[in-house]
Image (cartoon, rainbow, N blue to C red; front, side, top):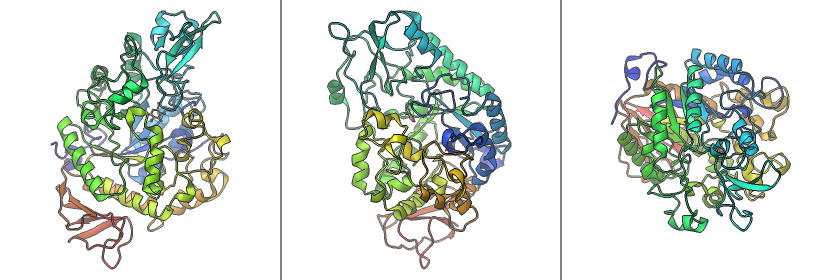
Length: 573
Ligand code: BGC
């Protein structure tokens, strides 16, 4: 198992430390919903630059920027028109450079989201493919197939897309006749690239260098497990594939036609060579919803180096589930040479302050809606507001986050969780929803818009200080009480808890080991790091005795010197 990074012990400039990512706190910004500098209702790059002082006082090590590239927003920017540019709605390349510089001056690294599985249907290559004949080099950059049936009127297979509806779309040929079909694992506006095509491979290397040269320190790789495909011969049916899936974990032998095939790692070996051309080497983290036994491959030092594990995100607020997951992931990370990753919230799932306030069964049932992707649950449904125990949800979320910040490995945070922000549920009218998951599921799944509503910066005023104009997704009136302005300097606020915890986490960070300390109460999890930093969480409802030591921070107030239910405390000494 790797030990303390040099920078942590000797105070070497963290920005130059090649291991900066191993125990970093990474804050995800969903750019269109963070801060709007020009009042057009859409967050932008200059808005982020203006908030660098806020990010600095939060105490994070890096910002991960969800896609900011030109896009028609068919999937919130994960439909990219041009990989080496900034969406004019968000700013310019010069704005990007200024933002990168401001972040770096504040000691904050920058991670860009790379979307290699698919482009948007407005990408110049896709337009060229549509205008070119069947069998042409332009079509070969994507996945085009003839249809089945007498006149090719049926899709090449009966597969569903992740967002619902078919995974194939028929095109009209340049001569106006109904033509071939192209594959799209996600929305129809997101045609899948053909990764057997050398031009596609070369172009992504160019993109990685383009952003690395502009000062990007690392990359988050979108659906990293989908790039390579085997679509030779007769394609298996949906039923064939389902029969072979092991429980909800997908294929464990790499034989699925498009998820998690072994060849995908050859691509990342090439990418690693590019990352290592830079000093310090650029980092990468894979978003790969794969069988747990196959996750380590994505985190290998010869490949991407780190991979998300979404295990805690999918767990109940439950001591034994947490303990099992933490132990397993630390062992796995150590075996692959990576550090572990932890995440409770992101732009695809219901915010954890809400999830933990939902009746457990509801989360599970609604989560099934996204079971398409490698059989994983994306917990997409948002939950109906009236079913949420807001107070309990927030209390548990604060306890879970404080526990996470004490774990060895990288902690990934999602904008707004530092405010204890709740998911917006049925307050978003159907007419204002944007998520393709909502439209492609004909309203069964309310989609991911509820965690993407622009942040409240002030308690009142236009769009709660998000900008001088409106907000591209409606903010409910209750956003007011979560505003940064309300929480800034307020004792006990979630924002101040995060600031304290993140500052302490940086100061206390030590080796990547964790020791479980036995506790007779099965609802209590207690662990220590090598330097004596301890974290204890009470997952139950009754107050419990605290172990010996000085409490340095707790997620809720202590009760007569005891640790109340749904609370975490850190101790020292
Ligand atoms: C992203 C989603 C996106 C999908 C398609 C996911 O992994 O996190 O937001 O819809 O990829 O790009």
